[in-house]
Image 1 (cartoon, one colour):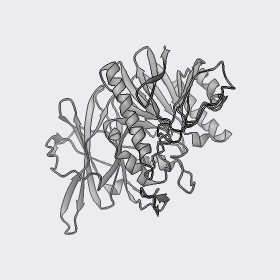
Image 2: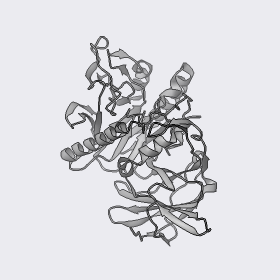
Image 3: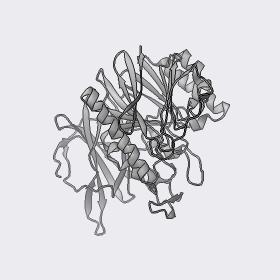
Image 4: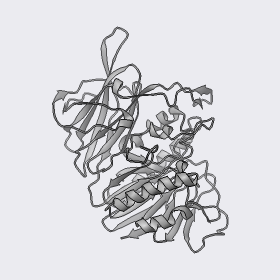
Length: 440
């Protein structure tokens, strides 16, 4: 399809760990008419939050080593009006080798070592208009065997900036994307669409973005798993903000590093030392989200660093609502025994945290308002769910548990207005299994 819009082009450094460049509306040019490469030269495109999602949004993508330059084009979806763009040069990007030669498995079950050396780009759109839907796509240049300059294009990607007084998000986790068992990813993507259908029926519009709470990959070290996941339509249509889960943090041979998650995304680089882009915070509308890395808090030293950082972020924010997310569970859903809640309860009360979101246990659990409301998502891959037993602990604290057993698919719709956050738990059929409101 031909695309002919007037764009602004800004030359900038896209080195991941030095931070993305600012958006500019200076200059004009014509977009090349090029074919859709369907992920051949440009792949793993995903939209991540900026620090303030009213005016900022980050983009992460990868390109083959033969790419000589890339152009990112942005238009306002409503008026199809050019907004601007970036020119990206591979020599100023990251030559990513984090996933190269990692032992993995192909979709057909064959064992292999990942062949994954590529240019990793991250850039940031800033000065965006609040409450606006945007489209963007990426055009890449390369030279063919005859040294002739050629162009290929990505598909079109979409995001919506914050700014509405009322907005909503899908919350999902633990789908352990694994190409040899493709129905895991199918189940999760169908669940995202189920939440969207429910949102449309109840608010006349679908949700605005997706919050995932970790374990979206079976092995985060397998780049082919990320690549397959990012090819799904749900990643084209929404901004995704997410957490590093224990599965995202490991390879097949149990090599552990948060780099697998870091280089698959382009989250704000406002975390503490060693956790930039993995632990981070952002605001969407009137809600502050503080994103933690459970894997960095396994011992007392790691926990202390995370709590010092989180306390500073929470106390310095004037957001109306404060939400903290980590991958590990607050309670063991099988019998209700306390898990991560005991480590964070005092800090959350001190800092006025309204909602604490967790995952990992594969059983949905919701507490009473303590005054922080603790909620953990179920699994969503129709394969790795967990059975509940009798509630032995915290009977006076836990208000609701839910699972479908070993084959569980569930997710939540989060709806926010000026005075409240409501959470609706849906099963695979879109049937409401739980509902709770947090009022300010």
